[in-house]
Image 1 (cartoon, helix red, strand yellow):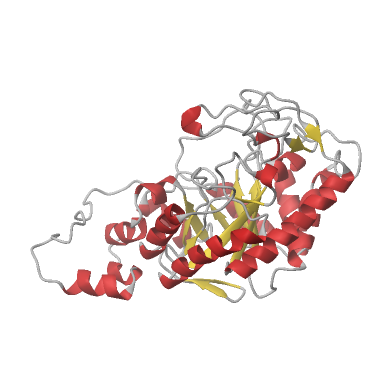
Image 2: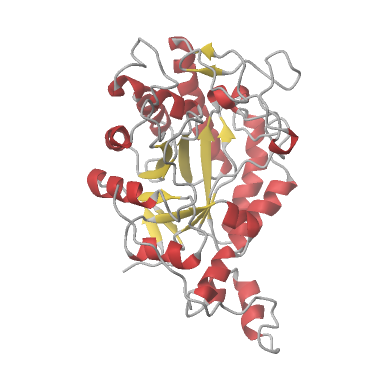
Length: 388
């Protein structure tokens, strides 16, 4: 029976454990380039014991960024900075993963702490946003949306392939396509955002054509021995949007096109949701497990899995294969070490680089003088997860 600290092998890549640092946009890039900040952020999480470490979403085109301070992989000049990061992640014992994406109609916005409002196309830091249909998201996303032409869709697929080539050159060994959170891929799948009448809209077969062609384009350049994965917005929690049953069919089709792993998340194509269980621990686990069982593909999820006992339980029950952590990884660079101590792992310091672990194991001192809190004695209630 696997647990949170069991290795996981996919294709020719083996992760030292089941813990993933999720992609999180930090708004610290300049002209799409990552900096020493990202080297610090990602290197420390790799040193802290995560098995797989993602930088933030890497935009495949300049207008695929959330804002001007977001990272990209649309220019060969960005390879050098990304290579520094992958080298550090590997040196600390983790595997470096890249998430390729395009924000679609949710791009051209201010930083969250500056209000996160969308900027108009004529603003110095804004641009014309693009999507499957000329439908603004609404709320703070109010500006006109350009409907992608067939030629522009084909160009975007080439941008995915070009980005994958750069990711390979930069040393990434795990690739994820971002088709969730109301971004471009999620928009194509959802009838709320996609109201096209051509081969890319209408029925489910047409609405998932964008994704399959993107996978085909990437698979042609991405090494077969390395995992190709995607994050899918599998439910809009709105009767007019993406339905989970549609997502099952879509993932199965993607698997036939060479997908190796499914990271399941929310559609987020509208703010008008019903019964969205944001406060429930691991609320995506049941959906992910159903796809794991019915499609026969390994899966991972995030969302409210930051309590070690809960994260460990979903692996031990073989409900999912990997646990993705966002805010817990941001809050605690040594979350894996903390979790190992909470779960009475026989050698928690084994998760750390050899030199660090040697000092923490062998330096004499009083109990807990290494600065780590003593493991909690309070039991944790682990919920029962029902398959969706």
